[in-house]
Length: 299
Length: 85
Image (cartoon, rainbow over all chains, first blue to last red; front, side, top):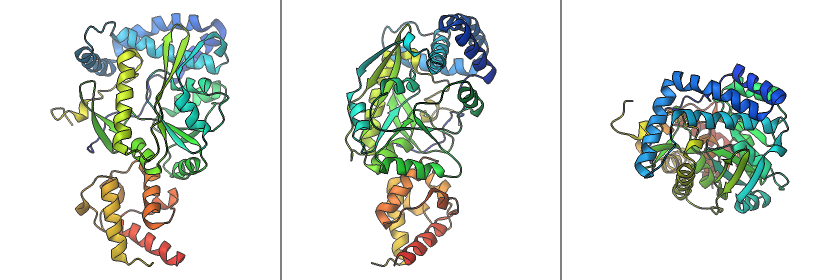
C-alpha cells in the first residue's frame, strides 16, 4: 500500500444539453429510438475524445495481455455501452422499468446485510449500472445511503434531479463543511448501510496499490479503511447489462465484520477484476487507471 | 484516568501513524494534520472512529475544520477530556 496523487479529475462524462436531448427522445420516441440517436452521437465521441481514447487503449492492452483471445474491444463499442447505460438509467427513472428484464444472479448476501439492520458497507465500482440496484433491492427492509462524490458534475446531477423522479436511495454527498462525517457515522450506528464506489481516487486522497489486470493500480483507501474501522460487514455488488434491455445483479458473499482492511481490499480487487474481465466494455473508466502506480510514468 | 499532554501526543502519534500509514516522525505539533495524513473527505469518518476508540470521545465533522495542526488537535482533546472529568 502506498500514498500518491491520483489522476481522475472527478468529472463524469457527458454534458447537460446532451442529457436533455436524450431525456426528450426517450420520453417521446422510446428507448430504442434513443439507442438509434446514440449510434450517430458516438462516432463524434470516438473522433474527438482523444484523452479518453488513449486511456481506453491502455485498458484494452491490459485486457488483451491478461485475457487471451478476448475480442470486441474498440472505442465505438465502449462509448455505445456507456451511452446505452445512461439511456437505460434515464428510461427506468422515467417510469419504463417494466420494459426491462431483471435477473438476480446472487443477491442473498447483500439482502441479508441490509435486512440485518446492523450497519454495513456495499462497495461497488463504475461498472455496469449501479443505480439499478434500487430495483433489485426494492422491498427489502433496511435503509441504504449512497455516498456521492462532490466532484461529480453538479450540472449533470441537477439535470437528472430536475427531469426525473426522486432517487430510491438516500444520498449523502461528501461536503466541505464535513456534514457527511456526522451523517455517515450516524447511518452506520443506526444500522443503516452505506454504498460507495471503490475504483476512483480524487486528487490528494490516500490510495492503496494492488495488481489489477496484471499491473499495479491505485485504489482509494477511504472505503476500505472505513469498513475496517467501523467493523461492519461488507458486500461487493455489481449491476451489469447482460443483454438487450436486460440487467443482472451480482452480489458477493458477506465479508464478516472485523475483517482487516487489507483483506477487504484484496477481496474487492478480486471481485472487481473478475467482473471487469467478464464484462470488459462495462467498466466506464476514461483515465489511465495504472498511470500513477507505474514508477516509469510521468507525474 | 487523566491523560497528560504527553500521553495524548504519544497515543495520537501511535494510532494515527498506524491507521494512516505515515512515518510517526512526521507527526509533529506544528505539522498540518490534513496534509501530513493525506486526509480526504472520507478519511474523517474513519478518523472519528479511531479517536473514539482511543480517547472515548466522539468528534463532530465541523470540529475538524478548526483543527489545522496536530497541536490544535492535542489542545482540543485536552479541553474535551478536562470538560468530561
